[in-house]
Image 1 (cartoon, rainbow, N blue to C red):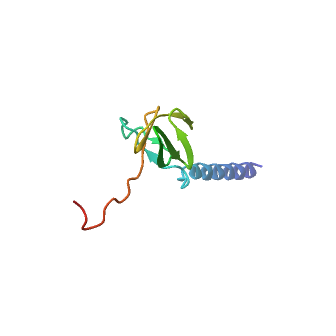
Image 2: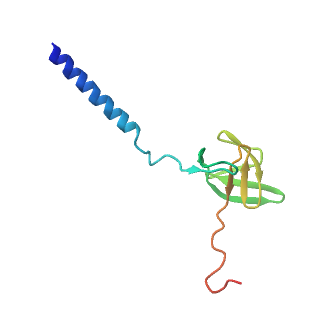
Image 3: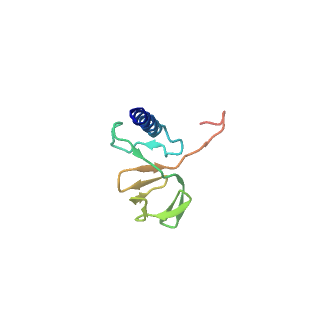
Length: 111
C-alpha cells in the first residue's frame, strides 16, 4: 500500500511540474509590446492596434485602425480616440499611433 501511495505521489508531482513548465512558454501569437509616450521601460503596454491610414473628408478626419473606420471620440477597445492628426492618432490613455510614411524619394533624386 505504501508503494502505491509513493507511486501516485511521484506521478502527481511529475504531472504538476510539467504544467508549471508549460505555463512559462512564450506565446508566439501574443501581441507585441509597445511603449507609450512618457512611460519608462519597466512598465510596457500591450498595443493590439494597427493604424493603416488616415482619411480626410473636408474638415473631418477618419482613422482606419485594424481595418475598421473610426473618428475622433470613438471608443476602441478600452480607450477612446482623443485626436486624429494628419499622420497620427492619439488615445485618451496616452498611446499614440503613427502612419508609416513609406519611401518618398528614389536614390539619386534627393534634394
